[in-house]
Length: 347
Image 1 (cartoon, rainbow, N blue to C red):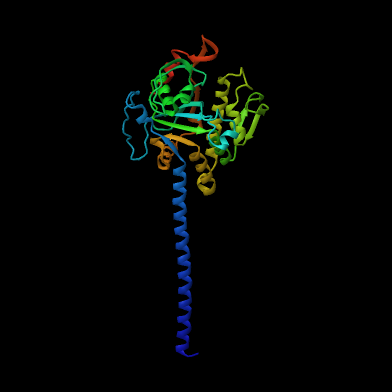
Image 2 (image 1 turned 135 degrees about the vertical axis):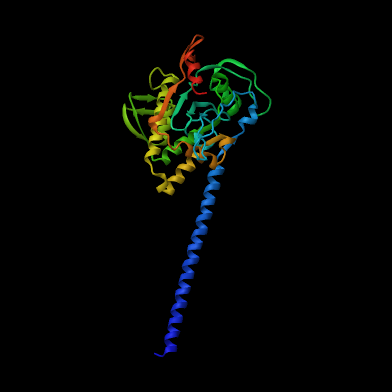
């Protein structure tokens, strides 16, 4: 073979390698573009999942003052001050899934579960205070979603606040009865809770007594059980199958579920499984209604990152101290001064 022929072969080989590298490069570029586009779509989708209400605008300035926040000495851009979040579980029948899971009356909703989540300064410890929905309270005058305001109502059940005036009235009622400013509001519906549990692969709980509740359709023997979303929701709603059938027994089950969910989340390495991470994120964002301060995915991510040092061992669950109401033995009222002292500790 002549030198010219050798050079010709080398040229063709270089040309082929060049074409191959070009194809590989274009393929990788295409994958990268698709990946970025998919990531953008995922962010847009999760962000669009979140529904929000403007609590601050609805309630104005007639609210408990925010505590003074001392700037963190660290260089971390994440917030570290204490925070109070009102978390409601609603029994809305909005949507087919909520209807099938046993939501409330068509066209309305009640706060089936109410918890004030207090994050301590430093975000390494938290207290969850459950408010019995059967607590008799003074419901303040609230702005109504349809316009106008409601009248002050004395001696009404706590969960009527949400039913009467939606999230803003629920927040105002809690702030009136506690004297504590709610920094944020989060609402989770039935279907969203069930989807979250399923996305996490179920949740393991231990019950100390047999449960047989005809209303929630739940039958469980005492012991440890791994529950799917529908069964976990039934457990959260159970009241007549345990204790004296009051809301107080159900609160104990709900607090057990909260700790079990946090334990399950801590066990999962979500970052190593993008599919699982997306399923959990989609379930969470798709079930939420928040105040405008948590209305974006970045807001929720920042909140989540700020509590990354919080462990289940540093989570305290309590119920607002109550006693039977003198006017109705099936209802309760705040027990004083214990209830006031509890709320003061969260300011």
